[in-house]
Structures are given as C-alpha cells and as structure tokens.
Length: 213
Image 1 (cartoon, helix red, strand yellow):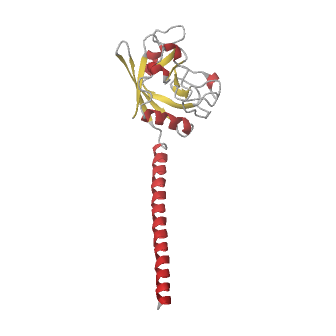
Image 2: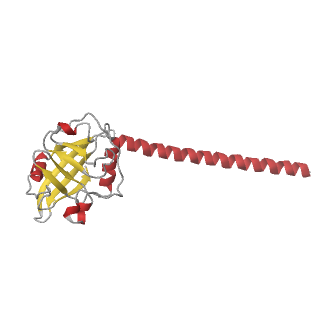
Image 3: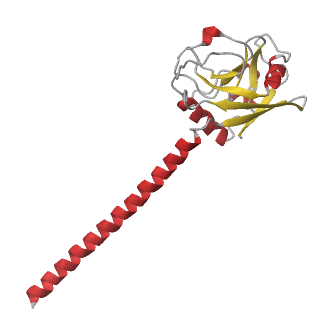
C-alpha cells in the first residue's frame, strides 16, 4: 500500500512537471510569435518608402515658408532611415533650424544645438548623440537629394542632414544619400536664399518641425 502511494505521488509529481513545461513552451511560442509579428510589421513599414513633412517658418518674423515633403530610401540606407524615423517619432527635430544655407549648393539642418544654444554653436552637434555608420551608395547628389551630414569621420553621421539645391558630384560616394524631396523644392529655394552672415547662418532663424506622413 505504501509503495502504491509512493508510486502515485511520483507519477503525479512528474505529470505536474510535464504540464508546467508544456505550458512554459506554449507561452514561449506565443512570445516568439509576438516578436515575429512585431519584426514583420517593422519590415513591412520600411518595404515601402516612408514619407515625411518638414514644416518651415522664419521664427523671428513668425512667417510660414511652407512644407517640404521628403521620401526616404530604406533599401539603400536602412540604418540612416531608421535613425531619422526614430528621431521624428520623438519630435527631436521640432525647433531645430536650417543653420547653414549656401546658394548653388545645399541647405543643412537638424543640429540639436540650434534649438536653444548660441548661434556660434550651431552645426557642431552633441557628442552624446548616436552615430550612424556610413552607407555609401550609388545615388547621385543632385538637386532635391537628402543626405547625411558628418565630420571627417565617415561613420560620424547623427541627426544633421542636408538637401541639395544643385548637383555636387564630389559628394557622390562620400556622403550617405538616403532620401529625396518629392514636393516643396520652392520652399527649399526660399530657405537657401535667406539673408545670411559670413558663416552662412541665416540671419532669421529658419525653424522646422517634422512629422511622418
């Protein structure tokens, strides 16, 4: 009788272990499925080229310059596109400026220093920012192309970007192009022709906000 009870308890014990293991495996499978779904959703999101709207105004004059719509290229520069998208999602660019404008060349912006730091610090960036490794590609730096600003280090791109107003072949393969303007080049032309100082900083702050379309 005692042996029967002991055997019964052992069988019950191992049955509980099997049930718990089975439940744990099922839960693990559920978590894996959720992760797969999340990954699939992210991949789906960037299979089609995402679009963003850059709204621009002259801050001191409180004058709206208009909107620039850009299309990004996740197929050629996925790391840069994801970096840009993550910054837009936290409204990082709101209040930053197009701090450097050069007619016949490009407009540059997206430096966090341009939110509230003195103008002589604009363009130098924040050393704590996440760096994005270079993704040089075959896209030519022609009018309307969006590309990543960087220092002499090819892998030093962060949040700053520039939009071409004319072709600059010397930048091809040296800077990561990752998007283009699909509408609003007239606004880009307004920005590049703003009165500027000797450092190519517009005299009136050209402020932006960016939203995903």
